[in-house]
Image 1 (cartoon, one colour):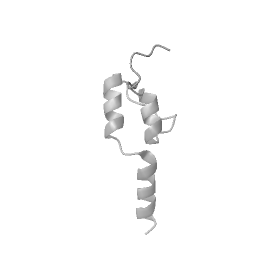
Image 2 (cartoon, rainbow, N blue to C red; image 1 turned 180 degrees about the vertical axis):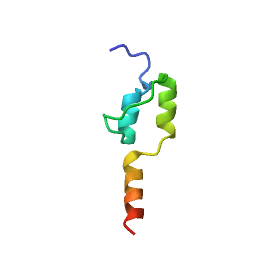
Image 3 (cartoon, rainbow, N blue to C red; image 1 turned 135 degrees about the horizontal axis):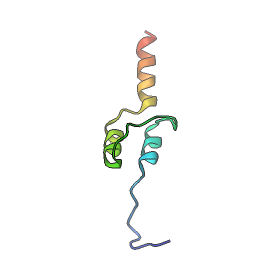
Image 4 (cartoon, rainbow, N blue to C red; image 1 turned 135 degrees about the vertical axis):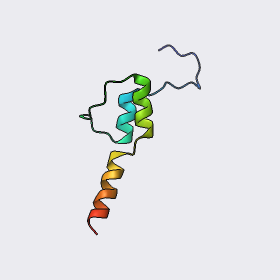
Length: 60
């Protein structure tokens, strides 16, 4: 392993970011740049959270 700095951390890949946000592996992203995909993920609402909100609101 090439380590330059013990305190340095690598940036997460878009697939890792999407998984952390709760997107399913089957989610299809638009054909866009890596940078824009990261931006889209960062501005997204976590799908499991939104699912639970909608479920709660529709059960009233």
